[in-house]
Every structure is written in structure tokens, then in C-alpha cells.
Image (cartoon, rainbow, N blue to C red; front, side):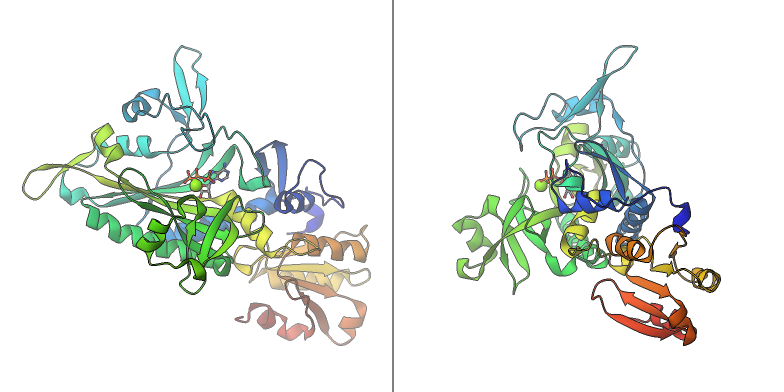
Length: 420
Ligand code: ATP
Ligand code: MG
């Protein structure tokens, strides 16, 4: 893509109404736009990253048997009354659901979805009757609306956000557990592919009525809202909320090997037991013809929160630093004055095999182009100048290390796609 065609502009200074690094950098670089507190639009550069994150999650969910669907934002109160969650408004931070509700012009109330257990369980009542119909693993990427009392940390705690939410429907607790562990492993692969694997740990958190624990996936960061106790050797952690002697004994963890750290909850998996299948009547007939309730689990990842976490973990004083796997472009090609024709040719060649952002702006000085490239954070910056062309080469800078190489044009393609 030609940067001259990109409608977004970069900003030199940080927006005054944002404290978090992720929002400041994403806004300055033109990845997102703030509509109001806790509500953000994804602009073209931001959407490219967002879509890559979604695609990685999609591939990993499909690999463990997930089937994608798309449920509705508007929710009928009826099914929520059956589970007892319609009247449950948020009163303090953790109790109740943070509902947004609205009214129909023709009369009656509607809910704006904040989660989808009720909706999917209701759908499956029409599709499940026998043990042969199970297990089912269904997921979506869908907007969630949450009337959070406090929004903070930029795109990491918002009132509208896209979540990947998967729900599992199993015949027994044992069958459920097998999938639960598969999904936990899948989450670790996802965060690794997003470039935050080294900083992300499976963390024991409080369960519900059906299970002692749920699991969170927590990314270490000073700006995280959570505190966890981490055993680096075992690669597991315990959320501060359940940090008791009893829990440590259960998990075989010792106080003196645990380190207290701040972290961001990027994902969450939760055993639901038969809470929703009982409430909404989702049953199946087993091999002996007996009616049994379906055993459920829910598995969430916030896309914006994950994107924000990547920014927080990797950014430096000059701007963002994207891992190649989710970078908006592979290469940022920069033309300096006087070599436009040669750079244009290189742009066309490289674009055949990789995603290139081509800074073809003629009115912008070199220094400004370099500062923008650092801010936007594309993994490779390629600069063509008269001097490099004399040697039939270009200058390649790796954004992460700042390392600069002179690469012959004939070898550029191979250099940029070499395995790291
Ligand atoms: P939190 O503890 O952060 O309030 P939660 O436990 O309510 O989140 P879930 O309902 O389990 O979260 O949602 C699954 C995932 O959705 C979370 O792990 C997080 O990545 C994301 N998420 C939850 N709330 C928000 C929010 N307000 N803004 C952005 N992402 C969110
Ligand atoms: Mg949570």
C-alpha cells in the first residue's frame, strides 16, 4: 500500500486524555480513533493487526475442533430470565453482569449482549438430542458491550470490544476436561504466535459453583490490573484473588518460589458445569436412553486487550514494535528524494510476495519518514538512496534490534523472508 493513499495521519504528540502507552501510541500512529472513553474505532492500520490476530485465533480454534458462527448483539430478555441473569445488574466491580439494555419502539426491553452462554445454549436445544450429537465446540468473534464502571488502560478495558468466545458442550465431566486442557494448550500457542508467549502464563483463578478453579492467561506487564504469584520454573501462576495456603497446597506450590507480579488478563477459560444447560433445558439421551444435562465450558480472548498487551510488552521509546506474525505490513519501504523511480520498481517486485507499506510521500522530509516508521513499528524498514543504489543495494533496518544492514537488491527478497 502507498502511504500517500493512507487516509490516516500520524501525530507528533500524545493525546492528553490518554494515560496508557497502548492508546497513546496506537492513536499517534493512526491505528485507532477514540470515539469516547472506553470506545475505540479500528482504523486501516489497526484493523490489519486486528484481523491477523483474529486469523491466528481462528486457525487454532479450528485445529481443536471449533466451528465458527456469529450470534446476535440484540438479546431477548426471556432466555436471560431463565438463567437468572437478566435482573443481575452490576453493582460493584465483580458482582452481576455489566448490562447495557435498550427498549423496543414497539414496546418491551432488549439486552445488548455482554456474553453468549444463554444464546448459544438456546440455539443448541434445537440441534442436540442424542449422545451422538456431542461434543460440540462453537465459537465466534463478536462485539461485547459491557457497562464497565471504570474504563482504563486504553483498548484493554473498554465498554465495547470484540471477544473470541468459544463454548464447549460435552457429554460428561471427563470429556469436558479433555477439551478444557486442549484449549488451554491452544491458548498458549495463540499467545506465542501473537508474540507474547514468553510473557504469558496460565494462571489459576477462582472457579464457579462447579469447579474449584478457572484458568486465566496473564501477560506480565507493569500496567496490568491483576496481580499474580508466578512460579517461573513451573510456568504457572495463581491469581492474587485466590492466593491462600489451602490453594497453594492444592496446587503443590511453595510460597518461597513464587514471585508477585502485575499482569494483564488476555484470556480466560471457565468450567460452567451444567449451570446453563440445566437452566435452559439442554439435555441429551445417553446410550441407555437416559436424559442427561450437557456439561459446558466457556473460553474467551479479548482481541483488543491482546493487541494492547502486545503494544505494552514490545514498544520502546520510539514507538511500537510489531512481531512479524501480526504486523500491519512486513516491510516499510521508504523512498528518498531522487530515487523514486527505482524505489517504485522495488515496491512492485516486493509486493508480489509480501505486504509492503511504501512511503511514497513526496512532500515529507526523510527524518519525518524515519520517525513515522519507528512509531508505526513495521518489522523491517528498507531505505533506498542514491548512495545505496551506487552499490546496487538498499539499507535494511530491523525495527526491534535497531540493527542496520546493507543488502544487495538481488538478495533483498531472501533476506526479508529468511527464517529467524
Ligand atoms: P476482567 O476480569 O478483565 O474484567 P472478565 O473476567 O470479565 O474480564 P471474560 O468475560 O472472561 O472477562 O472475558 C474474556 C476475555 O475478554 C478477557 O480475558 C479479556 O481478554 C476480554 N475482556 C473482558 N472484559 C473486557 C473489557 N472490558 N475490555 C476489553 N476486553 C475485555
Ligand atoms: Mg477476569
